[in-house]
Length: 114
Image (tube, rainbow, N blue to C red; front, side, top):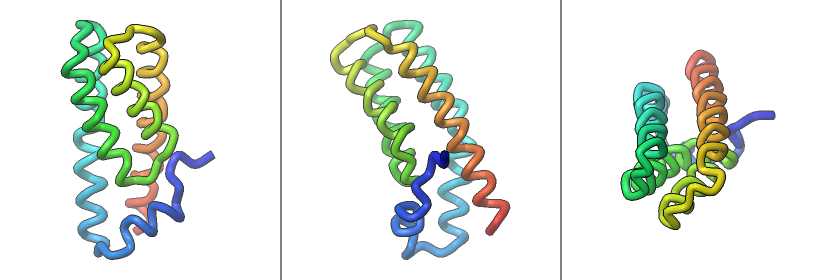
């Protein structure tokens, strides 16, 4: 099952030229591992303030790509951080990381087909 809703993705980027879309994707690809690493550190340190900020930031970026499952997981992580709850926080993060890697794979394929 695809991580990206292609119909929504195409609608979201319909007014952008290929070069701009490529730049947005490449910026995400360059930053994704660092973003995930920050989230993991925030969780290990129980730094809920930065976890909330970083999860919100990742959620916003993911939203550009119309990837509902990783978006929802980032939203859930942000919400747990706001509540300062450790309840299932690692599980949510691990699932988010898995879906972000799937998103990365799909975006790389998209770039190769353009």
